[in-house]
Structures are given as structure tokens and as C-alpha cells.
Image (cartoon, rainbow, N blue to C red; front, top):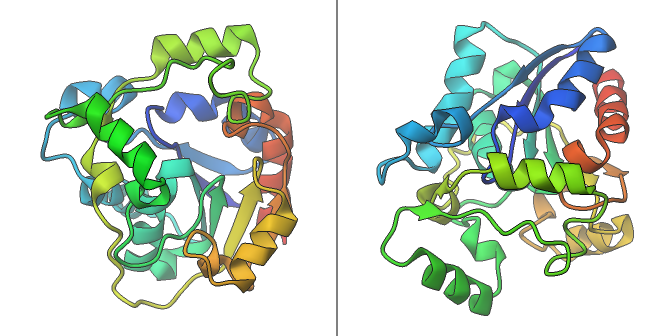
Length: 242
């Protein structure tokens, strides 16, 4: 059986992986859901010094202290950036990196860079001089594609439990050392695989690093661990067994 480390995206803690974790453990896997510094139950640690490097070290130290090897390292959305850096730091401990609604950003690119300029400007207006990125309103009328598949109870849960995210985790660029790359996989929910394949072929920075990796479709919204936890656990199990 595999060893999973599950890293959530912006605004969420390890709690978001609860049902996926239970299903993977039920299949015999070892699973470590992560809450990054400054978020969820660790929100009291948020400060302007919390950075992408901080979140990378959260992952690296967990893997080292738990003496984990052959890890299937999973990053959802913005969690893909610290996952990319962590895999670059300790490639000999990582069996595969799995990007859920994310991708291995190239050196020098940040999460903010993945947004068009007008969206970046809007976000900076919301943030002002602060060091935290507030969570969205979780309103399906405003964001139907990304929130697809989430029922009223789950949306209410997100409104209660999501917390502001350290801004530097989204604005700091990825820095790679040039270490040996590890195998990759993608779980795409809002991107059709044909679009992903075309973007890989074109060398698009979002997905170029997935060339030669596994590609899996799980059609739902942007938060499949909450909208399709059974399906996501099944895909992760199949990746671990491949």
C-alpha cells in the first residue's frame, strides 16, 4: 500500500481531506493530511513572514520527521506550489507528485501569475496593505463552474471553516534547485483532458511540467475532495497502484 501526503489549496486545512483520507485508509493506505502554517487550526500562526517557503518546509519536515519514503505527494490548487518545491528538495523520498486542479509551476512563477491581470488587480484591491488573502464568499451564483457539485451543507461548511490564507504563499515565485524530477500525475476536474493535452503540447506553463505524466479526468468543480470524495479517492488509489 502507498503512503499519501495530502496538501490542501488556499483557505483550507487538512480537514478538507477528511472523507478522502478515510476512504484511502480504508483501502489500506497510510495517509497524512496537512494543515499549512497560518490556516485553519493553525490560523493563529499567520503573519507577514509566512511564505511559500514556510509551507514548503511544513511538507518537507513532516515527511522527514515521520520518516516517510515513496510518498505519493498530492497538492490541490494552490497547494501545488509548495508540493512542487518540496518534491524538488527531497526527490528521493517522493514516488510521485499528484496535482489536483493544479500543476507544477515553472521556476519563477507564482500562484498570482496564473490569474489574468484584471483578476490580480481585483485581488490586490481586496487585500490592500494586508498580508492575508480572504476566502471567497462560496456563492455558486458568482462562481458556478468552480463550485459545481457542492451541496448546501458543504457550502455552509466552507463558509464556517475557511480562513484567510497567507498572501506570500500566493505571491512568492516557485524556486527550483534543478534536482532530479519525480513522476507526475494530474487530476483535472474543471479542465477537459483534451484542453490539458493541448496546453502541454504548446508548452503552457500551467501544465508543461506534466509532459509524460499520468492524466486523469474527474469532472466536477474545483474542490473534488468535497464534491466527489469517493471518486477522488478511487483515482488516487489507482495512481498509487500504477
